[in-house]
Image 1 (cartoon, rainbow, N blue to C red):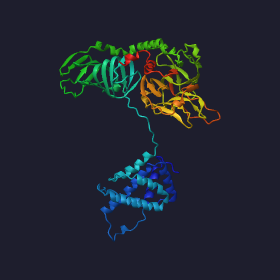
Image 2 (cartoon, rainbow, N blue to C red):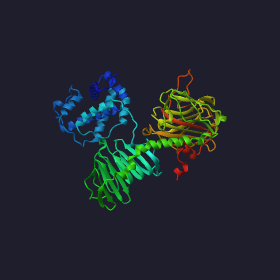
Image 3 (cartoon, rainbow, N blue to C red):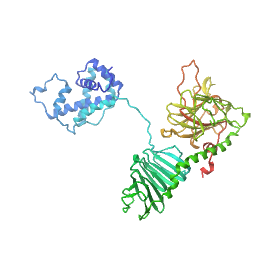
Length: 591
Protein backbone atom coordinates (compact mmCIF):
# COMPACT_ATOMS: atom_id res chain seq x y z
CA UNK A 1 0.00 0.00 0.00
CA UNK A 2 1.26 3.44 -0.90
CA UNK A 3 1.88 5.38 2.33
CA UNK A 4 0.61 8.95 2.42
CA UNK A 5 3.17 11.62 3.15
CA UNK A 6 4.35 14.92 1.75
CA UNK A 7 6.69 13.22 -0.73
CA UNK A 8 4.02 11.24 -2.57
CA UNK A 9 1.06 13.64 -2.20
CA UNK A 10 1.41 14.51 -5.90
CA UNK A 11 1.17 10.81 -6.73
CA UNK A 12 -2.07 10.62 -4.80
CA UNK A 13 -3.43 13.62 -6.72
CA UNK A 14 -2.58 11.80 -10.00
CA UNK A 15 -4.51 8.74 -8.84
CA UNK A 16 -7.52 10.94 -8.02
CA UNK A 17 -7.42 12.60 -11.47
CA UNK A 18 -7.03 9.23 -13.24
CA UNK A 19 -9.98 7.92 -11.21
CA UNK A 20 -12.16 10.92 -12.18
CA UNK A 21 -11.21 10.59 -15.86
CA UNK A 22 -11.97 6.85 -15.84
CA UNK A 23 -8.42 5.83 -16.85
CA UNK A 24 -7.35 4.27 -13.55
CA UNK A 25 -6.05 0.71 -13.67
CA UNK A 26 -7.21 -2.06 -11.36
CA UNK A 27 -3.94 -1.97 -9.39
CA UNK A 28 -4.06 1.84 -9.05
CA UNK A 29 -7.72 1.64 -8.05
CA UNK A 30 -6.87 -0.81 -5.26
CA UNK A 31 -4.12 1.54 -4.03
CA UNK A 32 -6.52 4.49 -3.93
CA UNK A 33 -9.17 2.34 -2.22
CA UNK A 34 -6.71 1.39 0.56
CA UNK A 35 -5.78 5.05 1.13
CA UNK A 36 -9.43 6.06 1.40
CA UNK A 37 -10.06 3.31 3.95
CA UNK A 38 -7.15 4.51 6.11
CA UNK A 39 -8.12 8.19 5.79
CA UNK A 40 -11.96 8.43 5.79
CA UNK A 41 -11.93 12.25 5.66
CA UNK A 42 -10.23 12.00 2.26
CA UNK A 43 -13.50 10.72 0.80
CA UNK A 44 -15.11 14.12 1.32
CA UNK A 45 -12.33 15.83 -0.61
CA UNK A 46 -12.55 13.24 -3.39
CA UNK A 47 -16.24 13.89 -3.86
CA UNK A 48 -15.68 17.67 -3.82
CA UNK A 49 -13.22 17.25 -6.69
CA UNK A 50 -15.68 15.08 -8.57
CA UNK A 51 -18.43 17.69 -8.08
CA UNK A 52 -16.08 20.46 -9.17
CA UNK A 53 -15.08 18.45 -12.23
CA UNK A 54 -18.71 18.23 -13.38
CA UNK A 55 -19.29 21.92 -12.69
CA UNK A 56 -16.24 22.93 -14.69
CA UNK A 57 -17.37 20.87 -17.65
CA UNK A 58 -20.87 22.35 -17.45
CA UNK A 59 -19.55 25.90 -17.09
CA UNK A 60 -17.24 25.56 -20.09
CA UNK A 61 -20.07 24.08 -22.14
CA UNK A 62 -22.32 27.06 -21.33
CA UNK A 63 -19.55 29.54 -22.17
CA UNK A 64 -18.49 28.01 -25.54
CA UNK A 65 -21.18 25.72 -26.96
CA UNK A 66 -19.79 23.57 -29.79
CA UNK A 67 -21.22 23.81 -33.33
CA UNK A 68 -22.79 20.78 -34.91
CA UNK A 69 -19.98 20.46 -37.43
CA UNK A 70 -17.24 21.36 -34.94
CA UNK A 71 -14.66 18.62 -34.81
CA UNK A 72 -13.89 19.50 -31.20
CA UNK A 73 -17.14 17.83 -30.22
CA UNK A 74 -15.73 14.48 -31.23
CA UNK A 75 -14.11 12.34 -28.56
CA UNK A 76 -10.47 13.03 -27.93
CA UNK A 77 -7.78 10.72 -26.64
CA UNK A 78 -6.53 13.33 -24.11
CA UNK A 79 -7.46 12.60 -20.47
CA UNK A 80 -10.70 14.29 -19.44
CA UNK A 81 -9.18 16.23 -16.55
CA UNK A 82 -6.33 17.65 -18.68
CA UNK A 83 -8.73 18.73 -21.43
CA UNK A 84 -11.07 20.52 -19.05
CA UNK A 85 -8.41 22.36 -17.14
CA UNK A 86 -6.67 23.54 -20.31
CA UNK A 87 -9.92 24.85 -21.78
CA UNK A 88 -10.84 26.43 -18.46
CA UNK A 89 -7.65 28.49 -18.14
CA UNK A 90 -8.47 32.11 -17.25
CA UNK A 91 -12.26 31.45 -17.10
CA UNK A 92 -14.19 32.59 -14.01
CA UNK A 93 -17.14 30.49 -12.89
CA UNK A 94 -20.61 32.00 -12.76
CA UNK A 95 -21.40 32.19 -9.00
CA UNK A 96 -25.07 31.42 -9.69
CA UNK A 97 -24.67 27.97 -11.27
CA UNK A 98 -27.59 25.73 -10.57
CA UNK A 99 -26.79 23.44 -7.64
CA UNK A 100 -29.41 20.90 -8.67
CA UNK A 101 -27.88 20.38 -12.08
CA UNK A 102 -24.40 19.97 -10.64
CA UNK A 103 -25.51 17.39 -8.11
CA UNK A 104 -27.46 15.46 -10.75
CA UNK A 105 -24.44 15.33 -13.05
CA UNK A 106 -22.23 14.22 -10.19
CA UNK A 107 -24.69 11.42 -9.35
CA UNK A 108 -24.67 10.18 -12.96
CA UNK A 109 -20.86 10.13 -12.97
CA UNK A 110 -20.82 8.16 -9.71
CA UNK A 111 -23.13 5.50 -11.16
CA UNK A 112 -20.92 5.09 -14.27
CA UNK A 113 -17.75 4.74 -12.23
CA UNK A 114 -19.41 2.23 -9.88
CA UNK A 115 -20.12 0.02 -12.91
CA UNK A 116 -16.47 0.27 -14.00
CA UNK A 117 -14.98 -0.34 -10.57
CA UNK A 118 -17.46 -2.38 -8.56
CA UNK A 119 -15.05 -2.54 -5.64
CA UNK A 120 -15.89 1.09 -4.86
CA UNK A 121 -19.54 0.47 -3.94
CA UNK A 122 -18.97 0.82 -0.21
CA UNK A 123 -16.96 4.02 -0.78
CA UNK A 124 -19.77 5.69 -2.73
CA UNK A 125 -22.36 4.79 -0.12
CA UNK A 126 -20.27 6.66 2.38
CA UNK A 127 -19.71 9.56 -0.02
CA UNK A 128 -23.43 10.00 -0.68
CA UNK A 129 -24.09 10.33 3.06
CA UNK A 130 -21.51 13.12 3.29
CA UNK A 131 -22.36 15.25 0.22
CA UNK A 132 -21.56 18.91 0.84
CA UNK A 133 -24.31 21.32 -0.23
CA UNK A 134 -21.96 24.28 -0.69
CA UNK A 135 -20.80 24.87 -4.29
CA UNK A 136 -17.25 25.92 -5.13
CA UNK A 137 -17.59 29.04 -7.31
CA UNK A 138 -13.99 30.01 -8.02
CA UNK A 139 -11.45 28.24 -10.23
CA UNK A 140 -8.75 29.06 -7.66
CA UNK A 141 -10.61 26.86 -5.19
CA UNK A 142 -9.65 23.78 -7.19
CA UNK A 143 -5.97 24.15 -6.36
CA UNK A 144 -6.95 25.03 -2.79
CA UNK A 145 -8.89 21.77 -2.40
CA UNK A 146 -5.99 19.81 -3.83
CA UNK A 147 -3.57 21.41 -1.36
CA UNK A 148 -5.95 20.74 1.53
CA UNK A 149 -5.48 17.01 1.00
CA UNK A 150 -2.15 17.36 2.78
CA UNK A 151 -3.75 18.30 6.07
CA UNK A 152 -5.39 14.87 6.19
CA UNK A 153 -2.04 13.17 5.79
CA UNK A 154 -0.94 13.93 9.33
CA UNK A 155 -2.52 12.25 12.40
CA UNK A 156 -4.77 14.42 14.56
CA UNK A 157 -4.31 14.57 18.31
CA UNK A 158 -6.85 15.72 20.89
CA UNK A 159 -5.24 17.67 23.72
CA UNK A 160 -6.69 18.81 27.06
CA UNK A 161 -7.51 22.50 27.22
CA UNK A 162 -7.02 24.95 30.08
CA UNK A 163 -8.59 28.38 30.55
CA UNK A 164 -6.50 29.33 33.59
CA UNK A 165 -4.74 32.70 33.40
CA UNK A 166 -3.07 33.04 36.84
CA UNK A 167 -2.15 31.24 40.06
CA UNK A 168 -2.29 32.16 43.73
CA UNK A 169 1.40 32.48 44.51
CA UNK A 170 1.12 33.65 48.12
CA UNK A 171 -1.41 33.83 50.95
CA UNK A 172 -1.31 35.12 54.54
CA UNK A 173 -4.29 34.92 56.91
CA UNK A 174 -6.69 34.93 53.97
CA UNK A 175 -10.40 34.80 54.84
CA UNK A 176 -12.66 34.56 51.80
CA UNK A 177 -16.24 35.58 51.23
CA UNK A 178 -18.14 32.38 50.41
CA UNK A 179 -20.05 34.15 47.62
CA UNK A 180 -17.00 33.86 45.38
CA UNK A 181 -15.62 30.62 46.85
CA UNK A 182 -12.52 29.74 48.83
CA UNK A 183 -9.13 29.95 47.13
CA UNK A 184 -5.88 28.32 48.20
CA UNK A 185 -2.21 28.92 47.60
CA UNK A 186 -1.00 27.25 44.42
CA UNK A 187 -4.48 27.19 42.90
CA UNK A 188 -4.84 27.99 39.20
CA UNK A 189 -7.37 30.70 38.41
CA UNK A 190 -9.69 31.20 35.47
CA UNK A 191 -11.69 34.38 34.90
CA UNK A 192 -13.64 34.88 38.13
CA UNK A 193 -14.59 37.20 40.98
CA UNK A 194 -12.45 37.10 44.14
CA UNK A 195 -13.82 38.57 47.38
CA UNK A 196 -11.27 38.71 50.18
CA UNK A 197 -12.57 39.58 53.64
CA UNK A 198 -9.16 39.97 55.25
CA UNK A 199 -5.52 38.97 54.84
CA UNK A 200 -3.10 39.20 51.92
CA UNK A 201 -3.15 37.25 48.65
CA UNK A 202 -0.69 37.38 45.75
CA UNK A 203 -1.79 36.55 42.19
CA UNK A 204 0.85 35.81 39.54
CA UNK A 205 -0.48 35.98 35.98
CA UNK A 206 0.90 33.75 33.27
CA UNK A 207 2.30 36.79 31.46
CA UNK A 208 4.44 37.62 34.52
CA UNK A 209 2.39 40.41 36.11
CA UNK A 210 1.81 40.21 39.88
CA UNK A 211 -1.18 41.63 41.76
CA UNK A 212 -1.28 41.65 45.58
CA UNK A 213 -4.71 42.09 47.23
CA UNK A 214 -5.18 43.39 50.75
CA UNK A 215 -8.54 42.54 52.32
CA UNK A 216 -11.22 43.62 52.39
CA UNK A 217 -11.11 43.73 48.61
CA UNK A 218 -13.13 42.68 45.56
CA UNK A 219 -11.28 41.86 42.35
CA UNK A 220 -12.46 40.44 39.05
CA UNK A 221 -9.99 38.60 36.80
CA UNK A 222 -11.13 39.57 33.30
CA UNK A 223 -8.27 38.09 31.27
CA UNK A 224 -4.57 37.30 31.42
CA UNK A 225 -3.93 40.99 30.85
CA UNK A 226 -6.77 42.75 32.68
CA UNK A 227 -8.29 42.98 36.20
CA UNK A 228 -11.11 45.06 37.64
CA UNK A 229 -10.76 46.31 41.23
CA UNK A 230 -14.19 47.22 42.55
CA UNK A 231 -13.10 47.79 46.14
CA UNK A 232 -9.95 47.61 48.29
CA UNK A 233 -6.18 48.04 47.89
CA UNK A 234 -4.04 46.28 45.30
CA UNK A 235 -0.34 46.54 44.52
CA UNK A 236 0.65 45.80 40.89
CA UNK A 237 4.12 44.87 39.64
CA UNK A 238 4.49 44.52 35.89
CA UNK A 239 7.81 43.39 34.37
CA UNK A 240 8.71 44.33 30.77
CA UNK A 241 7.43 40.93 29.58
CA UNK A 242 3.89 41.87 30.70
CA UNK A 243 3.87 45.50 29.60
CA UNK A 244 0.39 46.76 28.77
CA UNK A 245 -1.35 45.18 31.78
CA UNK A 246 -4.71 46.89 32.47
CA UNK A 247 -6.32 47.72 35.83
CA UNK A 248 -9.88 49.04 35.81
CA UNK A 249 -11.86 50.69 38.61
CA UNK A 250 -15.27 52.41 38.68
CA UNK A 251 -13.54 55.71 37.83
CA UNK A 252 -10.64 54.87 35.49
CA UNK A 253 -8.74 52.40 33.33
CA UNK A 254 -4.97 52.33 33.92
CA UNK A 255 -2.51 50.87 31.41
CA UNK A 256 0.91 49.90 32.70
CA UNK A 257 4.07 50.81 30.81
CA UNK A 258 6.37 48.39 32.63
CA UNK A 259 5.99 49.71 36.17
CA UNK A 260 5.01 49.20 39.79
CA UNK A 261 1.92 51.04 40.96
CA UNK A 262 -0.87 50.77 43.51
CA UNK A 263 -4.63 51.34 43.35
CA UNK A 264 -7.03 52.03 46.20
CA UNK A 265 -10.79 51.96 45.57
CA UNK A 266 -13.21 53.27 48.22
CA UNK A 267 -16.83 54.48 48.19
CA UNK A 268 -15.40 58.00 47.73
CA UNK A 269 -13.46 57.24 44.56
CA UNK A 270 -10.20 55.78 43.19
CA UNK A 271 -6.62 56.81 43.80
CA UNK A 272 -3.57 55.52 41.96
CA UNK A 273 0.05 55.84 43.11
CA UNK A 274 2.97 55.29 40.70
CA UNK A 275 5.78 53.66 42.71
CA UNK A 276 8.11 53.09 39.78
CA UNK A 277 8.07 53.83 36.05
CA UNK A 278 5.03 55.28 34.31
CA UNK A 279 1.37 54.55 33.61
CA UNK A 280 -1.12 55.94 31.15
CA UNK A 281 -4.88 56.37 31.32
CA UNK A 282 -7.08 54.72 28.71
CA UNK A 283 -10.28 56.20 27.38
CA UNK A 284 -12.69 55.91 30.27
CA UNK A 285 -15.94 54.01 29.69
CA UNK A 286 -17.45 56.01 32.55
CA UNK A 287 -17.58 59.37 30.78
CA UNK A 288 -14.68 60.97 32.69
CA UNK A 289 -12.83 63.07 30.14
CA UNK A 290 -10.71 65.18 32.49
CA UNK A 291 -8.10 62.49 33.24
CA UNK A 292 -4.47 63.19 32.28
CA UNK A 293 -2.64 61.27 29.61
CA UNK A 294 -0.23 59.63 32.07
CA UNK A 295 1.37 59.66 35.52
CA UNK A 296 5.09 59.33 36.23
CA UNK A 297 7.05 57.86 39.12
CA UNK A 298 6.29 59.57 42.45
CA UNK A 299 2.97 61.04 41.25
CA UNK A 300 -0.53 60.15 42.47
CA UNK A 301 -4.07 60.97 41.39
CA UNK A 302 -7.41 60.77 43.19
CA UNK A 303 -10.68 60.77 41.21
CA UNK A 304 -13.98 61.08 43.05
CA UNK A 305 -17.18 59.28 42.13
CA UNK A 306 -18.41 62.61 40.69
CA UNK A 307 -15.40 62.85 38.38
CA UNK A 308 -13.41 65.50 40.26
CA UNK A 309 -9.65 64.88 40.37
CA UNK A 310 -6.77 65.93 42.58
CA UNK A 311 -2.99 65.46 42.18
CA UNK A 312 -0.55 64.76 45.04
CA UNK A 313 2.70 62.92 45.73
CA UNK A 314 2.67 59.11 45.86
CA UNK A 315 2.80 57.58 49.35
CA UNK A 316 4.60 54.23 49.47
CA UNK A 317 3.66 53.63 53.11
CA UNK A 318 -0.05 53.34 52.34
CA UNK A 319 0.57 50.08 50.48
CA UNK A 320 3.40 48.76 52.66
CA UNK A 321 1.43 45.64 53.80
CA UNK A 322 1.01 44.43 50.23
CA UNK A 323 4.74 44.70 49.54
CA UNK A 324 5.64 42.69 52.65
CA UNK A 325 3.64 39.63 51.58
CA UNK A 326 6.60 37.45 50.62
CA UNK A 327 8.30 37.92 53.96
CA UNK A 328 5.09 37.14 55.83
CA UNK A 329 4.21 34.06 53.78
CA UNK A 330 7.02 31.87 55.15
CA UNK A 331 6.27 32.95 58.72
CA UNK A 332 2.57 32.23 58.21
CA UNK A 333 3.22 28.73 56.78
CA UNK A 334 5.44 27.84 59.72
CA UNK A 335 2.71 28.99 62.11
CA UNK A 336 0.12 26.83 60.32
CA UNK A 337 2.42 23.83 60.55
CA UNK A 338 2.81 24.24 64.31
CA UNK A 339 -0.94 24.57 64.78
CA UNK A 340 -1.49 21.39 62.79
CA UNK A 341 0.94 19.43 64.94
CA UNK A 342 -0.76 20.66 68.11
CA UNK A 343 -4.33 19.91 67.02
CA UNK A 344 -4.05 16.74 64.94
CA UNK A 345 -4.45 14.56 68.04
CA UNK A 346 -8.19 15.27 68.10
CA UNK A 347 -8.79 12.26 65.81
CA UNK A 348 -5.92 10.06 66.94
CA UNK A 349 -7.82 9.10 70.11
CA UNK A 350 -10.91 8.04 68.10
CA UNK A 351 -11.58 4.36 68.81
CA UNK A 352 -12.89 3.96 65.22
CA UNK A 353 -9.61 5.16 63.70
CA UNK A 354 -8.09 1.99 62.25
CA UNK A 355 -4.90 3.67 61.04
CA UNK A 356 -3.39 7.11 60.44
CA UNK A 357 -0.22 7.65 58.43
CA UNK A 358 1.08 11.22 58.71
CA UNK A 359 4.48 10.51 57.01
CA UNK A 360 6.13 12.72 59.62
CA UNK A 361 9.80 12.16 60.55
CA UNK A 362 10.37 9.58 57.82
CA UNK A 363 13.93 8.77 56.78
CA UNK A 364 14.91 8.86 53.12
CA UNK A 365 15.41 5.09 52.99
CA UNK A 366 12.44 4.17 55.21
CA UNK A 367 10.86 0.79 54.47
CA UNK A 368 7.74 1.32 56.59
CA UNK A 369 5.52 4.10 57.85
CA UNK A 370 4.35 4.04 61.46
CA UNK A 371 0.70 4.11 62.33
CA UNK A 372 -0.25 6.83 64.85
CA UNK A 373 -1.66 4.50 67.48
CA UNK A 374 -2.14 6.11 70.90
CA UNK A 375 -4.45 3.25 71.84
CA UNK A 376 -2.45 -0.01 71.75
CA UNK A 377 -5.62 -2.03 72.30
CA UNK A 378 -6.46 -1.50 68.62
CA UNK A 379 -3.44 -3.63 67.68
CA UNK A 380 -3.01 -1.88 64.32
CA UNK A 381 -0.09 -2.54 62.00
CA UNK A 382 2.32 -0.22 60.23
CA UNK A 383 2.37 0.23 56.46
CA UNK A 384 5.03 -1.35 54.28
CA UNK A 385 6.56 1.11 51.77
CA UNK A 386 7.38 -0.35 48.37
CA UNK A 387 9.37 1.91 46.05
CA UNK A 388 7.94 5.30 47.12
CA UNK A 389 10.34 8.21 47.66
CA UNK A 390 10.41 10.70 50.51
CA UNK A 391 9.51 14.26 49.53
CA UNK A 392 8.31 17.50 51.11
CA UNK A 393 4.68 17.71 52.17
CA UNK A 394 2.25 20.59 52.21
CA UNK A 395 4.43 22.51 54.68
CA UNK A 396 8.15 23.12 54.57
CA UNK A 397 9.79 20.44 56.72
CA UNK A 398 6.72 18.19 56.64
CA UNK A 399 7.26 14.72 55.18
CA UNK A 400 5.28 13.10 52.38
CA UNK A 401 5.65 10.20 49.93
CA UNK A 402 5.96 10.45 46.16
CA UNK A 403 4.35 7.83 43.91
CA UNK A 404 5.76 7.89 40.38
CA UNK A 405 6.62 4.35 39.23
CA UNK A 406 4.18 1.56 38.51
CA UNK A 407 5.69 -0.39 41.42
CA UNK A 408 5.19 2.34 44.07
CA UNK A 409 2.71 1.48 46.81
CA UNK A 410 2.07 1.12 50.55
CA UNK A 411 0.78 -2.24 51.77
CA UNK A 412 -1.32 -2.33 54.91
CA UNK A 413 -3.36 -5.01 56.68
CA UNK A 414 -6.66 -4.12 58.34
CA UNK A 415 -8.24 -7.13 60.12
CA UNK A 416 -11.70 -5.58 60.13
CA UNK A 417 -15.09 -5.78 58.46
CA UNK A 418 -16.87 -2.42 58.43
CA UNK A 419 -20.50 -1.42 58.05
CA UNK A 420 -19.34 2.17 57.46
CA UNK A 421 -16.02 3.59 56.24
CA UNK A 422 -14.38 7.03 55.96
CA UNK A 423 -11.18 7.43 53.93
CA UNK A 424 -9.28 10.73 54.00
CA UNK A 425 -6.01 11.84 52.39
CA UNK A 426 -4.02 14.83 51.18
CA UNK A 427 -2.69 14.40 47.64
CA UNK A 428 -0.82 16.40 45.00
CA UNK A 429 -1.54 15.06 41.52
CA UNK A 430 1.18 15.10 38.88
CA UNK A 431 -0.97 13.61 36.12
CA UNK A 432 -4.02 11.45 35.41
CA UNK A 433 -2.56 9.41 32.57
CA UNK A 434 -4.19 6.16 33.60
CA UNK A 435 -7.82 5.27 33.05
CA UNK A 436 -8.09 4.79 36.82
CA UNK A 437 -5.61 6.09 39.41
CA UNK A 438 -5.75 4.06 42.61
CA UNK A 439 -5.90 5.66 46.07
CA UNK A 440 -6.93 2.66 48.19
CA UNK A 441 -7.69 -0.87 46.93
CA UNK A 442 -8.25 -4.07 48.89
CA UNK A 443 -6.76 -7.35 47.77
CA UNK A 444 -8.97 -9.77 45.87
CA UNK A 445 -11.47 -11.67 48.00
CA UNK A 446 -13.95 -14.43 47.19
CA UNK A 447 -17.29 -12.67 46.54
CA UNK A 448 -20.20 -14.57 45.01
CA UNK A 449 -17.84 -17.28 43.77
CA UNK A 450 -15.46 -14.74 42.17
CA UNK A 451 -12.20 -13.14 43.25
CA UNK A 452 -12.86 -9.40 43.57
CA UNK A 453 -11.51 -6.46 45.55
CA UNK A 454 -14.15 -5.64 48.14
CA UNK A 455 -13.39 -1.89 48.04
CA UNK A 456 -11.68 0.38 45.50
CA UNK A 457 -11.22 4.14 45.83
CA UNK A 458 -9.67 5.88 42.84
CA UNK A 459 -9.57 8.95 40.60
CA UNK A 460 -10.72 8.48 37.03
CA UNK A 461 -9.00 10.04 34.04
CA UNK A 462 -12.05 12.28 33.67
CA UNK A 463 -11.27 13.86 37.05
CA UNK A 464 -14.11 12.15 38.94
CA UNK A 465 -13.70 10.25 42.19
CA UNK A 466 -14.92 6.67 42.11
CA UNK A 467 -15.79 4.11 44.79
CA UNK A 468 -16.40 0.46 43.90
CA UNK A 469 -17.85 -2.18 46.20
CA UNK A 470 -18.02 -5.89 45.51
CA UNK A 471 -21.57 -7.14 45.02
CA UNK A 472 -22.88 -10.53 46.20
CA UNK A 473 -24.75 -10.79 42.89
CA UNK A 474 -22.72 -12.62 40.22
CA UNK A 475 -21.29 -10.47 37.42
CA UNK A 476 -22.25 -7.32 39.31
CA UNK A 477 -20.25 -4.61 41.06
CA UNK A 478 -21.37 -1.35 42.62
CA UNK A 479 -19.79 1.83 41.25
CA UNK A 480 -20.38 5.32 42.64
CA UNK A 481 -18.83 8.35 40.94
CA UNK A 482 -18.59 12.01 41.89
CA UNK A 483 -19.00 14.84 39.39
CA UNK A 484 -15.72 15.58 37.51
CA UNK A 485 -13.49 17.79 39.64
CA UNK A 486 -9.83 17.54 38.71
CA UNK A 487 -8.62 19.50 35.70
CA UNK A 488 -5.04 20.03 34.47
CA UNK A 489 -4.92 23.34 36.38
CA UNK A 490 -5.44 21.42 39.65
CA UNK A 491 -2.28 19.40 39.09
CA UNK A 492 0.68 20.31 41.30
CA UNK A 493 -1.34 21.68 44.24
CA UNK A 494 -2.25 20.00 47.51
CA UNK A 495 -5.88 18.85 47.69
CA UNK A 496 -7.76 17.13 50.51
CA UNK A 497 -10.03 14.23 49.52
CA UNK A 498 -12.48 12.22 51.60
CA UNK A 499 -15.13 9.61 50.88
CA UNK A 500 -17.76 8.51 53.41
CA UNK A 501 -19.60 5.19 53.04
CA UNK A 502 -22.47 5.29 55.54
CA UNK A 503 -24.09 1.90 56.01
CA UNK A 504 -26.75 3.29 58.35
CA UNK A 505 -28.12 5.94 55.97
CA UNK A 506 -27.02 3.97 52.88
CA UNK A 507 -25.17 6.89 51.29
CA UNK A 508 -21.81 7.52 49.62
CA UNK A 509 -20.49 11.09 49.92
CA UNK A 510 -17.46 12.77 48.33
CA UNK A 511 -15.61 15.76 49.80
CA UNK A 512 -12.92 17.95 48.24
CA UNK A 513 -11.13 20.47 50.49
CA UNK A 514 -13.73 19.93 53.20
CA UNK A 515 -16.70 20.66 50.91
CA UNK A 516 -19.30 18.11 49.81
CA UNK A 517 -19.17 17.79 46.00
CA UNK A 518 -21.45 14.81 45.38
CA UNK A 519 -23.68 12.11 46.86
CA UNK A 520 -24.38 9.45 44.20
CA UNK A 521 -27.70 7.59 44.41
CA UNK A 522 -27.28 4.26 46.19
CA UNK A 523 -29.52 1.44 45.02
CA UNK A 524 -29.89 -2.29 45.60
CA UNK A 525 -27.81 -4.29 46.45
CA UNK A 526 -25.77 -1.73 48.44
CA UNK A 527 -26.98 -2.97 51.83
CA UNK A 528 -26.31 -6.57 50.79
CA UNK A 529 -22.64 -5.65 50.09
CA UNK A 530 -22.07 -4.78 53.75
CA UNK A 531 -20.10 -5.32 55.87
CA UNK A 532 -16.99 -4.48 53.85
CA UNK A 533 -14.12 -6.82 54.58
CA UNK A 534 -10.80 -4.98 54.30
CA UNK A 535 -7.93 -7.39 55.00
CA UNK A 536 -4.79 -6.79 52.93
CA UNK A 537 -4.91 -3.56 50.94
CA UNK A 538 -2.69 -1.10 49.10
CA UNK A 539 -2.47 2.68 49.09
CA UNK A 540 -1.60 4.31 45.76
CA UNK A 541 -1.76 1.12 43.71
CA UNK A 542 -3.63 -2.13 43.10
CA UNK A 543 -2.54 -5.45 44.64
CA UNK A 544 -0.26 -7.60 42.47
CA UNK A 545 -1.91 -10.30 40.37
CA UNK A 546 -1.16 -14.01 40.30
CA UNK A 547 2.01 -14.84 38.40
CA UNK A 548 0.06 -17.44 36.40
CA UNK A 549 -2.16 -14.73 34.92
CA UNK A 550 -1.31 -12.31 32.14
CA UNK A 551 -1.60 -9.20 34.31
CA UNK A 552 -3.90 -6.26 34.86
CA UNK A 553 -4.08 -2.70 33.53
CA UNK A 554 -1.76 -0.18 35.18
CA UNK A 555 -3.65 1.72 37.89
CA UNK A 556 -0.94 3.30 40.05
CA UNK A 557 -1.36 6.80 41.47
CA UNK A 558 1.06 9.40 40.06
CA UNK A 559 1.71 12.19 42.55
CA UNK A 560 2.44 12.80 46.23
CA UNK A 561 0.54 11.83 49.36
CA UNK A 562 0.58 13.62 52.72
CA UNK A 563 -1.49 11.89 55.46
CA UNK A 564 -4.00 9.07 55.21
CA UNK A 565 -6.84 8.31 57.66
CA UNK A 566 -9.00 5.20 57.72
CA UNK A 567 -12.06 5.21 60.01
CA UNK A 568 -14.54 2.38 60.51
CA UNK A 569 -17.39 4.85 60.91
CA UNK A 570 -19.03 7.62 58.92
CA UNK A 571 -17.65 11.04 59.81
CA UNK A 572 -19.90 14.08 59.79
CA UNK A 573 -19.46 17.13 57.55
CA UNK A 574 -18.04 19.06 60.50
CA UNK A 575 -15.45 16.35 61.14
CA UNK A 576 -14.47 16.21 57.47
CA UNK A 577 -13.87 19.97 57.62
CA UNK A 578 -11.65 19.51 60.69
CA UNK A 579 -9.62 16.88 58.82
CA UNK A 580 -9.19 19.33 55.97
CA UNK A 581 -8.40 22.37 58.12
CA UNK A 582 -7.44 21.52 61.73
CA UNK A 583 -6.24 25.12 62.23
CA UNK A 584 -9.53 27.03 62.03
CA UNK A 585 -12.91 26.14 63.49
CA UNK A 586 -15.66 24.70 61.28
CA UNK A 587 -18.38 26.96 62.75
CA UNK A 588 -16.34 30.10 62.12
CA UNK A 589 -15.79 29.14 58.48
CA UNK A 590 -19.56 28.76 57.89
CA UNK A 591 -20.78 31.89 59.62
